[in-house]
Image 1: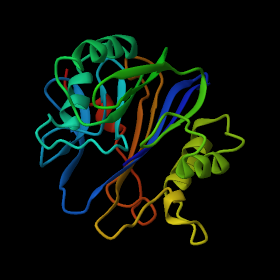
Image 2: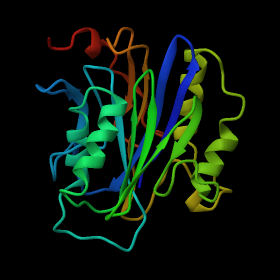
Image 3: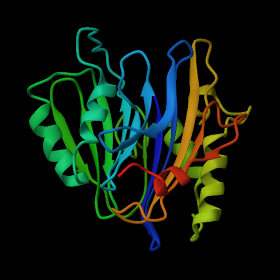
Length: 245
């Protein structure tokens, strides 16, 4: 299970902002985000080779979460590879079109995807059989392991209480998002914590990303390679100005 926070077209200068915590089993190794030859900047799951979140060189941002379900078929293709495939698309809209054509041909275990660029954003829900798409209006959207903006999800509702009065400048908003992603107040019941420390699984990494346009001009990528409550975010933004041509 992961938690994604999308702030879309809130800041004129930075229309695409996403913060995400990755939750996974502690014994599942991964590599931090880096540029790949196919023009994708993403982390890598060392077990299956896919990714949970990434950006491509055309300004498309894609994030994946598992979806709660009784359906779990180990023979189905990795959802991380699906996320990697979606990052080959040009725009948020074309990525959704591709997914709707792809799901009937290749089944996966249930999952959600956020597909966004500076102009449009979509949530795709897949129950293991059928997919549905929700176009997202400008503003704040949260996705965990159920539907986007689920009013009954404890983590989403707790995050919303922490995200009241969104700042209107990027540095202050980034600080707020990093603080939210590290939150696990002792008085909260575990399902509502943003940063998770379970017995066998927990929050393994976190990212806060901001894109200005499709050219990745002034793109910002801050990454914590560990639990964000104890691991400082590292600024990886220089890798966008130095990215391979």
